[in-house]
Length: 377
Image (cartoon, rainbow, N blue to C red; front, side):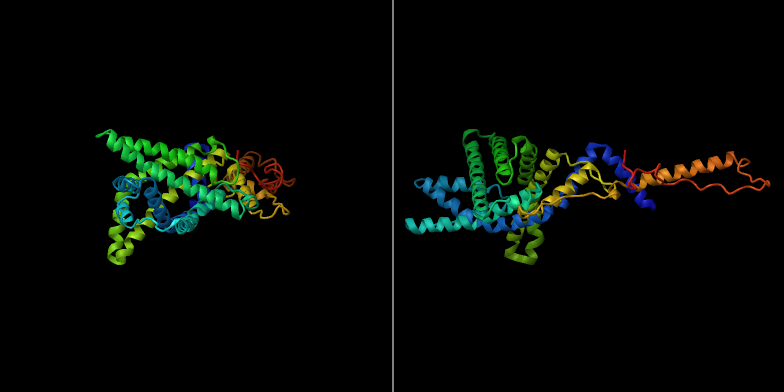
């Protein structure tokens, strides 16, 4: 074991003993194990293509509900799209309601809504993967789309409700409109995340299983809206010279990707907390209980048919800790050297010649547990 590995293993022992270090490392490890970054990419990609159909649907619904008050329609739409920093004005300018007779309009709304289901399905796949739900338990084609539809409608209600809160706060409490809007929007987002985290997961979760992640996701999104203007402005300035008009699309996609990453990070925190999947090792082996539980969940997730069962076995090498083994070997060697200094006369042969001393025991059955491994105490 070289010097670098020895120091890393010592650091590993420290972080495993301190929850303040072990929990964040376990979340980061599981984020990579679940390929959450790839899921965030898919959510952002599908969200980009779902955004404009949903925008058409939103303007159409507002047109029906507020038919006699076009100014209120525009104010409410502007407040709702304010959640998209800087880009909200461009989105509002491109928002036009669907028009036509009853049948044509119904077909248009249905087609638009179906086209927006992609983001719901992507979010559903991410949630089931992060919770390591076996594929055999994932919803079928129809249930999957029903859940996606419910999630999309929930998101639309949350966005529209946030716009209504912002607009109402500005009219009712002048001077306090911004704090009230943030507080009301945060409460609405918290409720939406609590429901969505349970709705999109193909297993029965308790409210307390998702409460921590929902609170963190709410904080992440509120912070993202506060810092979003700076982030989008920077992205636009970097991309405008090269990509021109498409810089707006790139900035929007980047913002949605960052939001998806933060949301999935909150979900990972939920899973690690709910199933106590920490501490995790930096260098493996040894495998901690958190490592074993995580890898077992990942293995069992691969079950795709009820006729096939997945079992997990762990080899004795999973308990081997080279740092402890090295320390034990050095201790045994030092003990052997000490014995050799003290009883050299007793080992002399019958003719007065010094006999050969027995080698140190090293890693025999007494020094190492059965199976050739040593468990970290």
